[in-house]
Image (cartoon, rainbow, N blue to C red; front, side, top):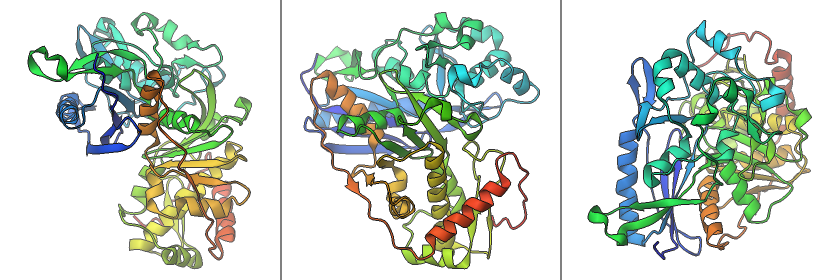
Length: 468
């Protein structure tokens, strides 16, 4: 095997897929990115895996040439799986954002295990990927019978590069309906459907699986070690633990805001609030709450892609404009339709209202997950500016830290690889967020909370005053 210790990490998100190259000292040597293509196939929306694989091979080959990369690792978004037979996909990889048709969805939902077995709440679309597996099995029973291996999304890519099929617990255990965390084993759904024999053997995230030869003709100079992938948010959790955080709450942000608090008791989880038990890379159940915060910010802000000023936030508070949940499926306020109330606004003020919304939803979720310990915020929402500072003002009794990288999932994946080499190159470079001194924020938050709690997730939501 190659002696090079630089590490390539593919951080494969739903909206953006990225490649990071880490030097032996943990520094980021380069990065590249693309957008995965979701295409139509037989009436379903699926991943163009050939296009993504082509980009991955080209960029990885260049990284080997430019930086002497010796290892490759994969961090992948949740809710996604691959069905494989004889070295190929039996069915293209499903986009998790599509709902099985009624009445089939009702029949499927009768098959899923209880919450106290899987700690997976019943979620719409394919947010429980066992639900999408049941959908494909009902649509194409003969094809499903031919399946030799059911691969979690990061393990699909580990297999494409190494040729070895394995499973990984942080992904299988991520609100899939497939895992019983208290038993540390597959759920009753897996056995009742006869899927256990299709599940490859488990390997820990980061384990070396084989090699990939980037060069034609089998030249060993192009051979690099391929490592078993990991679920992205759980990878971020591993990263912050690896740099010294212990009793803390992680707010991992991207398309989703995923909040982990291991100090929360499992019995506090409310399945109707999109609360669940994730499973760490070491198989430990971790109380979690989530909502689609990055997607909601994009929708509520009208696609705003610049920073938001404090003045704009102050004007929104003064005008009494509120964005109310929810602008995307899932989350702790399911059944409510996102909208604005108050005077009509646009441009930066609309973005400011959206930013306040995401901060207040995060604050609400932190209360539900019983967070009283230090908070670490990672991921894309840090780049909006003010998000962490708003939370610091709203939660003055808790220290709130932000990461200098905002890419915890990629850094965690790299840390897992470096661990196999007995190396710990990453240091704690987080910074404490300073609370804002926004006049009226606390009263604004109290009013927002009252409006939310009056409606509740089970109440019909009025659709008036919606400003699209």
